[in-house]
Length: 387
View 1 (spheres, rainbow, N blue to C red):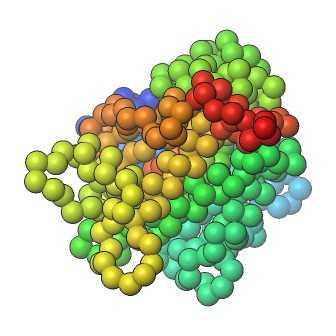
View 2 (cartoon, rainbow, N blue to C red):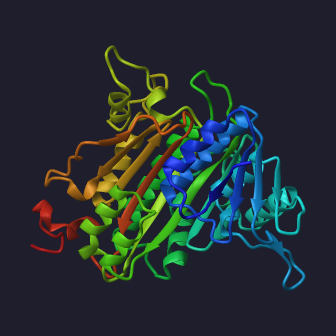
């Protein structure tokens, strides 16, 4: 029996090996340091979901006690189980055996969901927070609700929730720099709206049940050398962080936000054009006035993902998009003076998964700075405080 470790050393290649065990159970080992890089975690979650949908057994072994009761109240010991990946693991696995020899899957799931309920949809684990939705019964996390239980919230409600979470994580009174929060709020709202409209059904309109949500992560680096030392981070993330180090060296940290769903992928949500490749269609999805919704009425359509890019340019952020098996990045710190986006960089068209979308941004946190984008003087712009 071959076991696969689920920890910080997990790579995209490791997750790809899971697919080679289709005819037998997938055995995963969860250690005390079980925590994956944000991109690997996203692909691993999608892979687990696909394995579960094809009814391949998943069996998990924890190297220690998964639950403990130091003061009479049972708590979860593993940070992993407070993440979207951890929830997917609990739903997909047929058993989770800890060092006691007991199957604790149902207790873990019940405890984690109760914690999520008490937190109004939020799970906290170490350097990350997850705002969790579950389709079809809880598509809007309680912390986002400002009206009917199933109604999509207003932008301000979403922004206030995410910004408050970011402030609590960073220990700062501002989520990054002054002027940054509105751009973070725009990204979150537009990505969530796209997820809500296109990530809960198949292309044919069939409802897709499951866990999805928003992850917020703090990436702290005491020095520039530490960036290169984080070997579990993908090269393109380390290259970006090294490039923007001069703008984050005071706060010594970057922030990452990911919106994840279980839909068919952004590039499949648009009708294809003659001769158009998958890459072309994914790029087009982030252009203005692109939508699969019926035309009509006076409501602006297809502007959401274009606003994601506009807000990311103002943050000088790195956008990472996984759409099914396609992986692409957009380094908005390299945006020209016109503020038009640089070209997408496609890193893979076959990640070994076929479902779901993850839209992430990473940006350097500033301390006491003006609007984030104005710091990047390579754009040749003038600060709004200058006359």
